[in-house]
Amino acid sequence: MTATATPAWELRAVTKRFPGVVANDAVDLSLRHGEIHGLLGENGCGKSTVIKSLMGVHQPEEGEILRDGAPVAITHPIAAREAGIAAVYQEFSLIPTLSVAENIYLGRLPRRHNRVDWAAMRDGARAALERLNVEIDPEAVVGDLSVAEQQLVEIAKAIAADATLLILDEPTTALGLDEIAELHRVLKGLVASGTAILYISHRLDEVVELVDCVTVLKDGRVVSTAAETPVTIEAIVHAMIGEVADHYPKQVHVAEETLLDVRDVRTADRVTGATFSVRRGEVFGLGGVLGSGRTEIARAIFGVDPLTGGEIRIAGTPVTFSSPADAVAAGVALVPENRKFDGLFFNFAGLQNVSIAKLRRLAGPGGHLVLGREREIVRELISMLAITPAAEERLVGLLSGGNQQKIVIARWLFAGAEVFLLDEPTQGIDVGAKVAVYQLINELTAAGKAVVLISSDHDELLAMSDRIGVVSQGRIVDIRAARDIAKTDLVRASAEEAA
Image 1 (cartoon, rainbow, N blue to C red):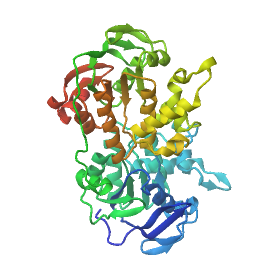
Image 2 (image 1 turned 90 degrees about the vertical axis):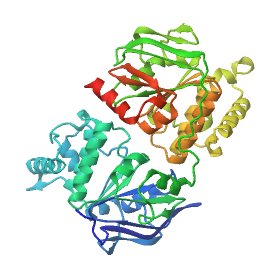
Image 3 (image 1 turned 135 degrees about the vertical axis):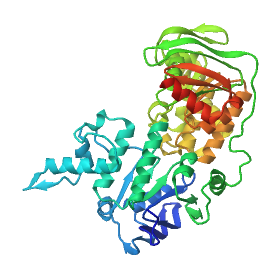
Image 4 (image 1 turned 45 degrees about the horizontal axis):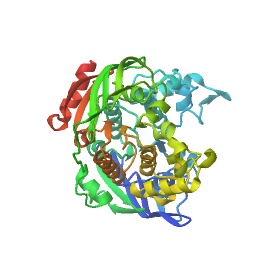
């Protein structure tokens, strides 16, 4: 279906203020039937506030929201749902112990004679799923579904509620390539039937492949409208952060000495014989499809999963890790894929999150912590890594994704790590923060550290690695210099081996 002339939904000069900050400053946004509209910008640019205004969570002080050309008042989230707006967030709003049908109709169960009409609910859920052309049992328990299937259930909720506007916030963070392709197929089917879609993502390669137009926000303002923004990575990056000399500022610092040597490593969890080595100053990329065993190899090296076979050597010395604490003591660091659950202590400020990896470094007479020394060292790392100074005292949950990621890296620098295992280090952070992480990788390799980079972003993996090992079924099936491998080679090698 061709996008309509009159917007399905429109924001006109919408302004939302919070104490000390203008989150949205006269934002204009037109969302048309039959169109996928990308809303992009760095963390803190105002995207979330736009979503919350549309969803009735926030009430703008100025401007108006229109539906099919007529002003509407969205005073709370239920009003947004009744008006035809549905949102799918990065963290799903599903109840895992309920069925698919119950989740789809949560809060608006169909009734007959003052009782829940279970048959109507199942039929309605089945019809919504059929519109998406997906095979999910309406009676299945949501907690038993894959992440991709749960996301489709969230979209089916919008279908069943007859939403005219579907908002997707970072929808592909936890999905593999095949699952992303399936999601895009579903979204294209929805716009073909007239739905308007607002799509928010940091993964620009997906954005340019999927969306029809793009609006870019910066500091709460629209800096590039849909009419002004070519749907290309270069144009979008320029609109978001200005000129970038090199989006992937790769530097080469590879030395001769082998720092990490992994020999036929096996675990009970998917690692079936991984062999590779990483030299000082080298970035060794691990590529492969979701579920290939990349993360499990990192977990094995970090002592999370015990080895059932094989050997790990650090600087030529065999090591045995019975726990992550042993790995940390040996100079191995892990920046995990899910920093929120596995990498950060949300009840601590940035300062304590950094120093917690090696508290004995702060020990004074009698074993007491020297807090002045802690503050001095951490403040130096915050400055060196260009982390916001507020991170020293602010709870990490209140920091941006980029600052959170740099806090985890600062922790391992504090601990004196030599081997850095970076699992999806730029996942969920904006373009400017990604460039900052790439610069940090350069600084690590310049200091002689060894880096293992795991990334589902093939452009990132190819650009920032010196060599790449393709992972399939828990082992390395191919190792080549990054300059000698193309994106198509990477996808084909991992997919064919997994077949």
